[in-house]
Amino acid sequence: MKLSGAEIVIRQLEAHGVTTVFGYPGGAVLTLYDELYKASDRIHHVLTAHEQGAAHAADGYARVTGKTGVVIATSGPGATNLVTGIANAYLDSVPMVAITGNVAVPMLGRDSFQEVNIAGITNSIVKHNYVVRDIEELEETLREAFYIASSGRCGPVLVDIPKNIQSEKCEYAGKSPIPATNTPCVFDIAEIADIIARSERPLIYAGGGVIASGAQDKLLELSEKLAAPVGLSLMGLGALSSDYPLNLGLKGMHGGYASNMAAAECDLLIAAGTRFSDRATGDVGEYEKSKTIIHIDIDNAEISKNVSSNIEICGDVKDVLTQLIPKVQAKSHEKWTTRITELVKEQKKQEQGYAVPEAFSPKNIIEAVCNNFDEDTVVATDVGQHQMWTAQYYKLRKPRTLLTSGGLGAMGYGLGAAIGGCFARNKGRTVLITGDGSFGMNLNELATAVTNKLPIVIIILNNQTLGLPYQWQSMFYEQRYSQSIMNRKTDFAALAQAFGARGHRIENLKSLKEVLENLSDGIPTVIDCPIGGDELVLPMIPPGGSIKDMVVGG
Amino acid sequence: MEKFTVELLVENKYGVLNRITALYAKRGYNIDSLYVHATEDASLSRMLITSTGDDYIRIQMVKQISKLYDVRQVILMTEVKIKI
Image 1 (tube, chains in turn red, orange):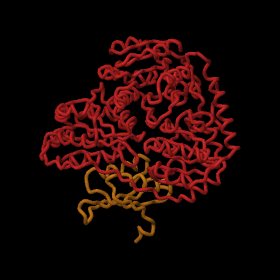
Image 2: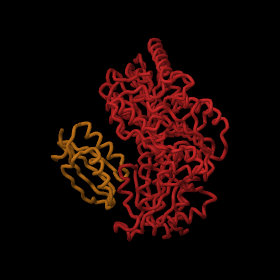
Image 3: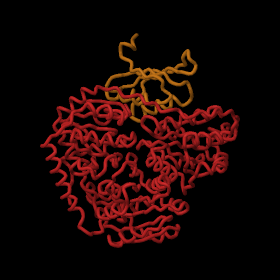
Image 4: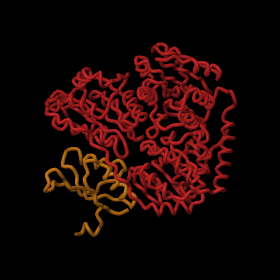
């Protein structure tokens, strides 16, 4: 059967179970959009306000569903607008296929209208990319693209399809997707069981790999069996319920006192599905001191890249833990358990110092928001102070419920991601916690949320500053607030209404609760919450510092 | 810091050399010498890349290059092997 390139794309999307795509049309993808029009009963295309929003939406959709997110953009500016979204998916290992149009093959390399070499531009932020110069290669290229995006350590793959390739025809084989390979990891289980048996103060450090591999139950099982507390990376949040007593929560620069102290005091660190980001370790020399490190990760290049480990296990976390757990002895270590209880108690005491009861403070606002929604509600964040407060105080109970830009730290991620997350939940209630700075970056996507009747609740922690730069300038630059005080006059409630959304400005917890209890369906609601400009994210381990440098404050 | 050479077997197509040299550039490692030739199998090329670095750099480069989809095989050459 002969099909056009555009028809082959649609067939391949369907073959890979794609039902929702995000994108923005343009000259070089009109042939593809013509086929999308014809396939609109099978594939729902979500038109965003900007390609960056579409890329973040595909990312949010992928994080919630675990499926590969798909974003489509035209050549030139359409393609370059995807770059931040692709980089974000790359750094947080999110499976994504980005399809771009390009000028016709004979026009490539001539600086034609709306031509960029997007494959060259994205080389260092994709797992792999393709320029399809021959229609005969299109089917196989798309199969490989989906396979690469979702296999091993997940990530983005870009497929650039010149305009003539979309309309040319060739024989379509109709092959099914490349099956995932699951070779069990081979490692010295007895040696590791022995190291674990000898340890007196074990700590598990879990990252996004646990969620990506669906190993959350195994993580809980290991922690219970070893009576080992667990610290989480930002990407690992949700891997364990925050109700679980041994879950110490976020570890790292703005992690809790207990998890960071435990990391400094443990004699064995079992790191699972994490890459030891500098934000999680601080001073690596101090971090590695006086402990044995077992590092489990699916990406061999991450092992001993940032932190040198004593035991290296390259494999899927779920597979490794499944093999390991039956072979380790159950442990109890009263002194360590007592110490952890002390640390948690100390952390609770510190946290009380960060917020006066009933004050309209970040902690109280986030807790009020959290208490209003069930455990399946997806919460997205942007990047900055509000993101760290959310990581600290929003009680996540299930994996794949937090959408946050971890590795790239991209302000402007949140609204697009929330839109993707909302579609992944069949347009169910979705929360975005953002700041006035981040929201200002991509608030154009409010139009998308309104058009699609998405019941996204947008909480703006509005401190009139760029909070994290402000905090750093306050702590490390002798209060020289260079360009971090915005003092904008934006009326976010009126702005929301102008977009066709609901908008409120709220100044106390009681009114916040009232608004949250009376949300409308089928429409986004923006809640502008003015907070003090001098609120700090605490505790904090300064960049490159160690536990000794922790600023607790309060 | 010592010289080290990696021998690669890669897909013989455009853009592959770019992906590999970009990995060196990303970490700021200069390439001291580069040798590329087609092999008896027309779909594959062989590369020899010499650079300078310590154990950490050598291992990282081999691991990072191994992740590229156009790369079929990576061998970290030893001094002795190069002399042969």
